[in-house]
Length: 321
Image 1 (cartoon, rainbow, N blue to C red):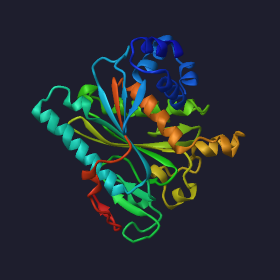
Image 2 (image 1 turned 180 degrees about the vertical axis):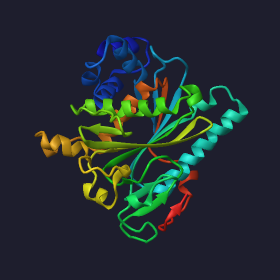
Image 3 (image 1 turned 135 degrees about the horizontal axis):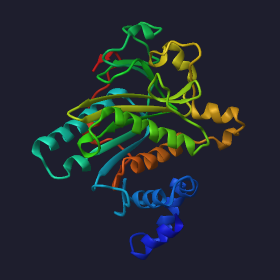
Image 4 (image 1 turned 45 degrees about the vertical axis):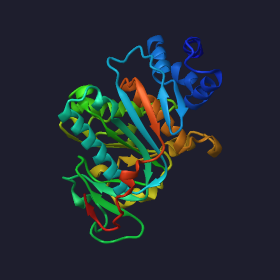
């Protein structure tokens, strides 16, 4: 990894201080040691990111990218209300649809979006979810949590602080027009993130998402229109596990199956509390793996949602959005 960076430095792209920061931020050493030389070159060249105000822009060297794909990453700090994030997703999806209609060259690729955030406690149901999987009345008001029914697939799931939610708004025309392929690629991103912490994640033959043995650590629920995806995944880092008790997570009513988190797994294997990864650290590894897996050539980084999205108001009552 260092020699690749030095080669880029020789071209006058980045200075030594920036490269040092990149290495620290993305921990290239451990990551690259698990991949072949070809993947080392790709990871280094695709993910050399430097700060420009509120974004990161990669140097344009990629050994694997087929086309000049661009990704906008909205890595949002703090807690984000669900409806605000949903409105922002829909805005981004409409921009991609408009780009398709106008047939603007590279417009869709430049607007592919990954949103990473944490929500206030909220239970979401897919459009065909069975409400019997909720152990509470979804029409009753609570100060402790929200309930939303949205257009994604899948059953009820929980989002809250300590859990990373990733919303993926991608035009699969620029990748592969196959929703099953996309779902499996998202699972692979999470499996690779877990691997960097020594956690062996896997797929389950009967269920979607990522599992560690019989414990589910990441849920996935997607929707698509004209091959433009929306919604995405959730990865448990350190959420309040008791909040899952109000539901049958993802509709899996099997006493041999349960829900887990990165902190829970690492703690029971002897990792001290001060050595457990923070949510922000795990987010950075998601960005790294997502950009590499989907072969994005350029990554633009934002740490806030755009003003238009912030104008949508919060409704504490049930929203069939």
